[in-house]
Length: 384
Ligand code: ADP
Image (cartoon, rainbow, N blue to C red; front, side, top):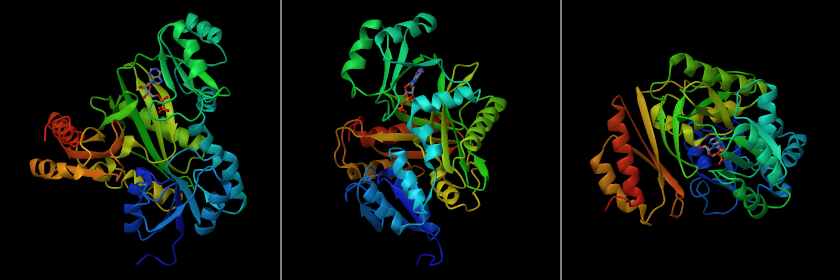
């Protein structure tokens, strides 16, 4: 039985983030709605209140808004003008379009961070190969070319070694009206992520700063907390994320992806939703990022982000040769009673994120071995 007096919460997007948000919504007795594109999407399979429609269609968004009191997102792709129309209808849109734009548009994000005096890679907007060459003359090759909008999981990001490659990327990769920026290629030793939750009246909590490892632009592994991170630097990363959340009036979860070159931290990207870097928190913290996102957008008091063990390791399960993921359960669960498996109900395709595993404890090398083994077994890179 749900709490009859509570608000109805709607999440736009039916992916795995919405699916993982459904569990704490159920635990808290919150009526949880999802706007999904298809009935077989990850969240649509498990959520009772699903509306089918497109996040790009303002009529669909309006219909969805009419069913909910507070609207939030499992991705960043809803056009800001649509969100303003919903706000005008009286719907609480969290995060709001004025904050979300900085997670949608990398050029706007770089401009804002630079104005705020926050360190990020050297960058410039570019219109032509000559502009990129000019930038590389001062910053050196390689450079990183990015489209301002629409990228995710490394799509829309190209590391460019020579001028010859630039024209081809600019001409063939995207619509002719794409906005481009170029960045210095940061020689980082590792990537970090600082996540915070912030509510409309300004309460905020910071999760431990994690280390993330990407493969082919896709998050592969997360270790919480980032090993051997100087406590002062960890606190300054958390303080920076809290500062950005406050500056932009973010409501819900904010992830600040960073590069660590051993000397400085550079902000790479912002995400205003639960994030792959925080999946460990479902099994590894007092209050998961999904629960705190719900609490934050509903303006409820936030839960403790405290870790339950010295380390948590999360490894993504990427689609491989094995179509039937269930066939891996007997081995994975029998081998390791401490491992937690999360599958997203997505069709297996090579390289696609279809789930993740987490284990928590105090022996980091053993946690890494256990989590990698389980993920590899699901992906079929270990013989069944
Ligand atoms: P996405 O929109 O896919 O999240 P990102 O801007 O986060 O795109 O880039 C994806 C990955 O590309 C990063 O996680 C990092 O590994 C690499 N990358 C992006 N920008 C830079 C940079 N300026 N220097 C070095 N590596 C970068």
